[in-house]
Image (tube, rainbow, N blue to C red; front, side, top):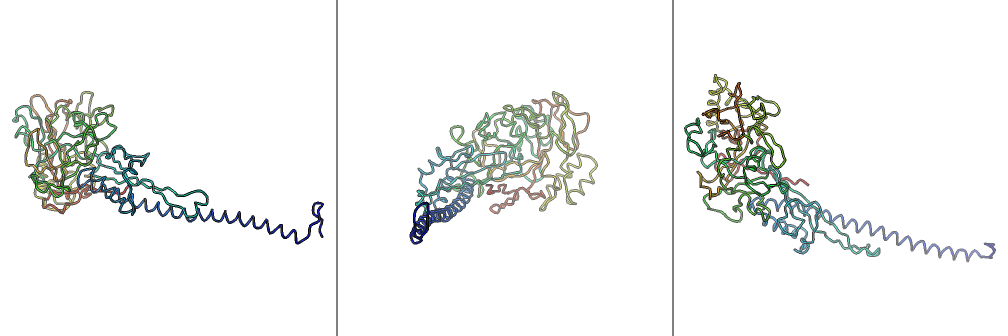
Length: 483
């Protein structure tokens, strides 16, 4: 017998009491163990669902982006996103689920009203698509013991379409049949043509035409409009959205289908988001001559955003000053032949004695080119290198017509024509010398460009098409899963 707190207790009684305490501890431990099992098993199920959600989001955003690009229609892209989500989840996400879906980081444009979880936005030469899979509920196994019936998961993904080197797609364009190595002209439609030197001494509108670009940035003051200001800004800094071409090539309306559909520049504006990757444009209404000097040489200000002229000198390379209204402005003076690599064009150009003869030798060489890179690696960064579309149409169709883009080509911005007294001499890179010429925003009359082929560039930003026998044909788009 033991004395315990003033009471007499037998060993048998003590052991009986200890077994009762053990039962309580075992019961409590079982709850803890089952709770841990709930965390391990149910959390593992939720992680598996989350991985599935992420894979679904990745495939849906890529598939939706591809269909959007192919059809130039965001509505078809949305339908493809929903189809892929249902197919890969193995269950149906209802329209009500999509409408209830919330994405705090949604992009600027919602192609489906009220649906935050499919969105897109644009930047200079890029287009971003975003998909968030609506929340999925994973039913718990052990979690119900703790009062948790299901766990919620979701996932998002973004795909980025990279269309061209940033800022190099310009609101100029060429007609079908334009030859490699030719110099094409854009000029004002007013004034006698005979005051301009070749190649700008022909018809009132040079073949190196243009189109009225829209602004797609949803934050821009003049979003979804065309104006002199948008033309100036797009020429100076580049069109602010990617564009696409017809695949297979547009040919007078033949073969146009759901996979080769017309998407016009600015279509849908301003009541709804514009067509995301337009392949059809309206003609230039005049060539905005009053803004070409500002866009190319002087620089300016648009909606409070200052910008330099496209040809204003930056970094290394030959430069020359021109006299602007506020003083000297350095502009790029690097000729196309300074970028030749190897002997294909370098030899004939080196033998030419003057800049004019070097230019002639360069054009002859470019016209005789058949294959292979002939420019050095620095050429892609040249301020004078740009890209423009080539239309299916072979000539101007009038202000009420539209033009259909079949491909894109690089061009070298060559000569500027700035009025000097009563004449318009050609100011060509490599041949501009002191004393500098004077320029004001309203007196640049014309611009020429030398037509190139992507395969001439050693750092090719585009790959040859396989659906066209046209040597100009290039595919400029790269689609990447970015998040």
